[in-house]
Length: 198
Image (cartoon, rainbow, N blue to C red; front, top):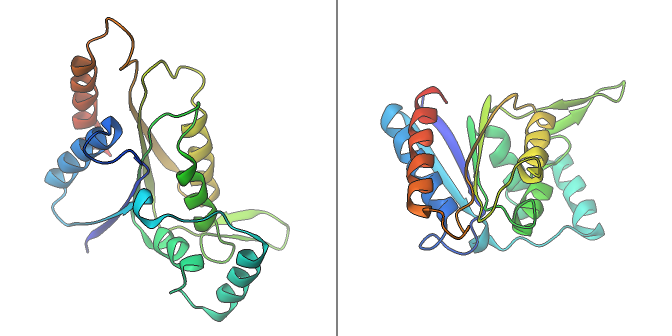
């Protein structure tokens, strides 16, 4: 049975210029070459232009969950996310986190009754099929302990039932005197190694 990979592309500057997209594409290419039976679906957040949820959206979404309608934009992203075997997110390191488009997408993915539920005692239980996820980022400066983008997304992964998570980055790309090409090349070597054990 094919492995269904959901690739969330939050590189809103575009594929041609985004270093994060370049690194994620390199990883995916290597991963697919090692795992032939793969179906990849890419969601480019810049293209779908999701809006933040408002009160009307949330109420309508709750009704749609009860009706099992999975075609509406208010439901389909959560349904798709819940059924993926593997999740890969590519998001540049912006403002100590990531572009706002990714947060809006996550709002659309976190749907009670589809990607998570509450037990009678109030415990949250993740409903996602995926057993593993990868977060890829690049930054002009140093991320160090300010890795709030990955920390947040990692918490969401756990909340939705995805236990095994990985992080891949290329940092300090815009520091004067640094060799950005070498940094990217080194990150690609890491990506190649990770693609074999992911």
